[in-house]
Image 1: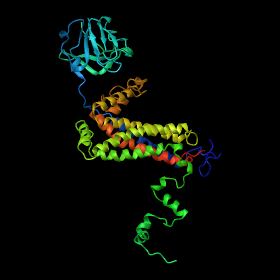
Image 2 (image 1 turned 180 degrees about the horizontal axis):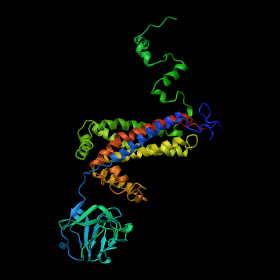
Image 3 (image 1 turned 120 degrees about the vertical axis):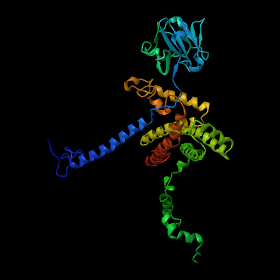
Image 4 (image 1 turned 90 degrees about the vertical axis):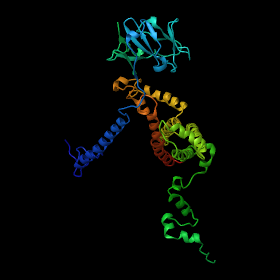
Length: 185
Length: 257
């Protein structure tokens, strides 16, 4: 391996030395320390911008016991308060978001026409008889994707609990993920 | 020729204090004219000499200068507004109304800030259009174009963050819609491409960084306030310093190369 010249420079005249001198080494340590602390500081700052506790309205609600819901029904009793439908199929519950995926209006459920219909721009989403897998899939109007679904669990006291912060999207094939529906026979 | 009598101004000018501040003679010579400009921190921001064509409005539209003037106006009026405005959910809207309806000259300060902000966005676009149409982005000015694009982004960010501060329905929903675009950011937005790669979700992604949570709330207001009053103006000011300096180093304003 060729060595540096007496003064530590490259024998072939390049600016880079072949072997690091003691000065290079100390310089490397110094710059490494500076850049490492800037990096750690930056990471810490980014983490600081995400507080552990958020002071936001609750996103979890209890919806009563499963038996309170009529079989094969689309319950719109929670629309005003929490803005979703609780749909009971033969073997499961699904919570369908009432926020249109077009521009965020609130659709209505039209029982006789068997569809969710948005009054703003006429987006239509498939109704109850299409089954739990494809219910609320967009089929007419400008809406680009199906209505979202919220996470459902059974609380310890036997009530249905909805978590609106966790959504499942049909267009991402998430309808069968755990929590996307609540099994109930 | 009789020696002129020394007036009080001559006495002041020959004093030690005056000479420690202004280090050139006052006699009207070409050298002193240059020194007056180059030895003064504020005047030296201007070139000591400018070419005749630099003053022709048809070349520059003066849009860069107007943008900078508006930035100064917005800084002054913005600081004045800060004396009354409290960036919290309870007070922000009422302080805005208080400024409008009760504080003496509050209405004109708020409106100067508001209309000046609108004008600055327009002026900055016209400036960019002018630079493009005159080909002033070409070498050796290509890096200054890059700085300018960053300044444009900073102007738009100032506009966006400032829009939330009145804290009325219009601003809250405008910012809701605006920050919702952050969901689709590649990698760091939870609805964007490759979101699963980093494992971001609605609680921890680019939008949550902006809004300080899942929705636009009081925490968002404070965050936007700090961004609007401190963070972005400092970045914009630093970029402006580089921008103006480069204008001179890259051949001067509106000069053919």
